[in-house]
Image (tube, rainbow, N blue to C red; front, side):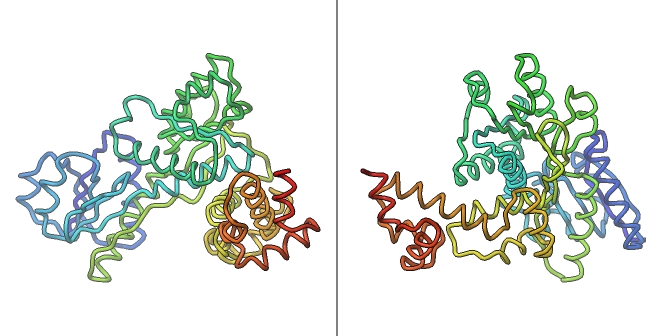
Amino acid sequence: MTKLLLLIDTMFHFDREVLKGIKSKVDEYQLKFTITIDSIEHAEDILSQHWDYVIADFDKGDRYRVIPRLNTNILIFSGYRIQNPPESVSTLVNDNDHFACLALGQFMQNDIENVAFYMEPRECNTGWATERLECFEKHANELEFKYFNDIHEAIALRKFPLGVYCATNRSARKLVNFCIERNVEVPKQVSIIGTDCDDSENAISAIPLSSVNHDPYELGQRCVEVLVKAKRLKRIVHEKYQPVSLIHGKSTITMESQNDIVSKALYYLHNNFHMNIKVQQVVDFCRVSRRTLENRFIACKGVSVHQYLSDLRLSKSKKLLRSSHDSIESIALQCGYPNLSYFYKVYRKQFNYTPLEYRKGTMA
């Protein structure tokens, strides 16, 4: 019988759900595995035995001392980037950039410009929470949100509406309580998105939480898929775990017209408008048909993807024409127009004046 060792801690709900996901995928693939669960702290006992496959939580225990010494097919999973993974070991890590994309896309749908990140003190020293903060702050600034480093100051100064992405659902629940205690309306004034979809945290939250759907059951399934893929290809594999949706609770403003596909499309558009992208590239990023994207986008935003992209470029170009001393040709390229001639053509068609005339008019 083939032996599969799981180095996870089933005292935690998250790990128990990962285990369920692993078992379901093993059964689906009809793999003849004997599954053993152990703690990475029991190093000598683990190393004294032979294992055909190993799946290990790389965020726990003395992993660098144990895992490199296991000469077998190994998959490690982690909540954040592994800078120097052990050799000959496949990896599956959370794509925290993608988590930020989902949260920011939702705030875009709600027309929220002020954003912040929150994690409770006990999470400050964890790699995954720190990386989520770094990714969210980086992308918020790139997308020209008004990012606040101090969330309590932002709330005290009433920088509403304020969108807050939280490291976990626990952080989101505590932030909800903080707002309620200060008579701050959630989600009208502060819109809150958590991470992990922790049912226990949601059950005791005063307001049902919206959350990035980081599903440990799905993560467990993906672990088996990556491990089997590495075995089939006869090489190590490095992949990222990307949840595809948000769970919509009452801590964010949600309407029937809102949609996770639109959130992803908005994120992509705002992050790439400066390049000469086409609608098909947005379709490819969202992994849906063009018809599906267009129908949902129009239902949510009232315009087609192409029109939204055109309006976005015009808005950004006007801002640069008003506020910068960059050449008009440079502004055209910064806003995704292929050349100066086309930039002028668009302005004449849309406004019946040129970019230069607009700049002179606003500077007068």
